[in-house]
Image (cartoon, rainbow, N blue to C red; front, side, top):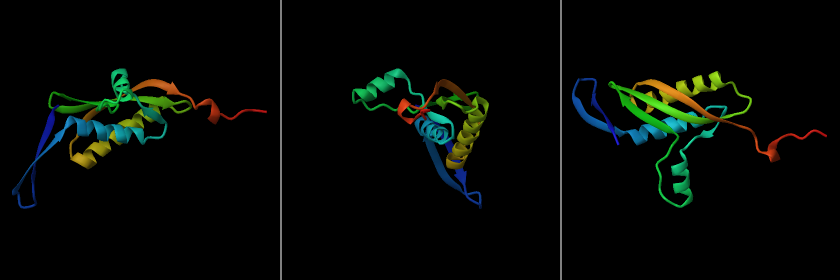
Length: 132
């Protein structure tokens, strides 16, 4: 677990202290932001985490992964896309939403958001419109 440190000063340049934000918090913010974009069915979590949850283990999987590279924050988001939505439009919307929410909530600038489309999801049969 990596912590992002940030020092804060008030309007009179007095040091107010330091705030530490873990990567898990950033991953949760990114995952929540991505899941709110229209066209995203759900976020992809790896198989080991899904099995762990099924067996009742507490897992921290969120569908997003934060990396610290060369002094900048990079986030990978794995999503399941709903059928019928444009891949570039949804991916761009996810990138913008994640960057905005991280900046708004933590005052940290994200250098890149990589969106990985894992699958295309269709509606379950009971929701599909039948002809006839």
